[in-house]
Length: 294
Image (cartoon, rainbow, N blue to C red):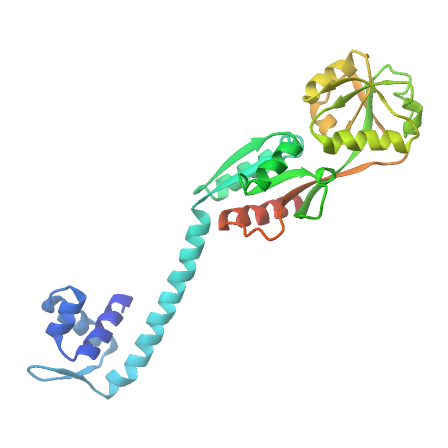
């Protein structure tokens, strides 16, 4: 017994005529008759009373028709629901992120998602926080990964992924290198090399120094962490950077000094409040949440 046989049975029961039912189904009369006979053979009962021109449901046929209608309705509901999942797994996703995907293992999460859902294509952009949020506002992105310090309003749905803390980065021979934890005010006379990656992290550095009672002397600003690390390794300045980011590079000539008053930062997946996520974006959001929980 299969769904097609049940559909054929219901059509014949509606038309009371094999020829008319076959015309409606766009199959031959002989093929339709064969399917009905196979159904009756499987059940072990005749479902129709037959004469030369018409077929009428007998008692068993009337009883069977309600089961057939129920099975077909459930089959239709199942196929409709599965079609929703099929659309979910066959889509396109545009993700924007500040340049931290490797440092926080986000690239590994994306790779794992791509392996599990190969029919969903992911396009990624790495830019500074201001640019990423502008792209998100202009609906050029489905989702964005930024530091929460970058967010200037409550306009976003925020899903925290990873926490981090700011550290002072110095050459390993620097006089401050052994002072752990360090009151940031002791760096008042240092030349700073800061990451110019948008107002979020840069403003966080300035705010930390202001809280410690001084305005930093900024010698250089750069958009690439590798450049900052290179300058610090040459002992021409110090920097304030995030601990996990620096640990990723593992440069032998620098050290990370924890601050006496920790300055926390959170990397989060964000999208505007009220934005209806596509099935693919919603699937990626849930995948990323579970990935970072693990």
